Amino acid sequence: MRICIVGAGVAGMTLAALLERRGVKSVLVERAADFEHAGYMLGLYPLGYRVLHGLGLFEAFREEAVEACFYDVFDGHGKKINHWSMEVITDRFGPVLSSTRPQLVSLLRSGLGDVDLRFNTTVESFTDIGHAVQVKLSDGTEAEFDLLVAADGIHSRTREEVFGKQPGYDTEWGGWVWWAKSDAMPAETFAECWGAGRFAGVYPTTRGLGVFAGAPDEKGFGDPGAGRGDRIRAHFDGAGELVEQLLADLPPDDEPMFFWRLADVRAQEWYRGRVVLLGDSAAGFLPTAGIGASMAMESAAVLNDELSRADASGVLNALKLFELRRRCRVEDIQSDSRGLARMMFVRSSSIAAIRDLAARFYTLEMLASDLAKSFETPI
Image 1 (cartoon, rainbow, N blue to C red):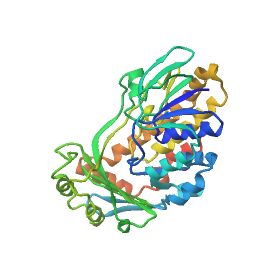
Image 2 (image 1 turned 120 degrees about the horizontal axis):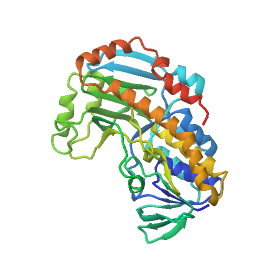
Image 3 (image 1 turned 30 degrees about the horizontal axis):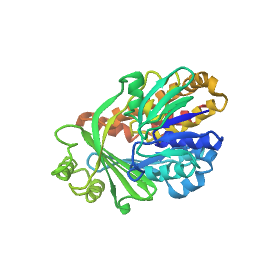
Image 4 (image 1 turned 180 degrees about the horizontal axis):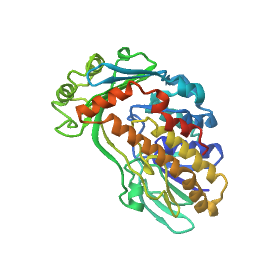
């Protein structure tokens, strides 16, 4: 089977590595020049990293990752609302692990073997001719493939060309991401500050503390350049000692920082002919549950599973079965992430006060009940 995968992110590389392990060669194209700017922090739940067991990469990942043992939530002024132990999840399913995206990407690359990975390459055009997809790449290559996999992310050009603009959910919030010193929080504790019109989260990795500082994307909050740091500090004034420590490591205005617009996408179709969407191109996730990477890896495993029981002539049925197995599960968990966003990202002080009061009496089992169910649901 001849397969072209667009996008060497978590989903694309997981699929390429799984195919390689079965002896199926793929062409993996990536528009970036390298993996030097592969992103910041991410979390992996057991439903995602169990795919690494099948690739023989789990132990290497475990050595580089930080286990999330505790989850602390503070109000908008730095007063602790609750301190949860992650044991209710980890004792049943395994640890929740935190790493950097570059660490995971590097690990997945080590599992690619001799996969044909092409940087600085995009798909210039493609045509589904029924028995194959004719693909023209920006490096001058033209070839026919049995399957074109669009794993090119939440802003997928491939998806838009095939299906047009797809609906999504926009929180109208955005946030800045940077690295802070590791002594601001214990290595095993993830912490978030839920305020009215502001949110800050800190997530330990072996690289340091990944920080996300979010607010409604208005009044210049997301503007880069001169005055960026002053605007961020002013917005989080009075947010408490933890946030003050994190802000002390805010990069200077002339250093690049990533601004994350908090919006997702939900494709109404996952495949058409011999073109299929995978990972964020099918359903992009808000970061609220930290589950996007896990779902991308799980989807890649299911697509590989269905393709393993088909030859080139059976691709269309394999894609149909893939969507039947994945779409409802992915959209249910995506809806959970949206629900968390509505709880975390509020503007009203009165609503924030009611939420914070309720959170004092919540158990982690109550907060993560839907997520826990997904661990026990077969795929």
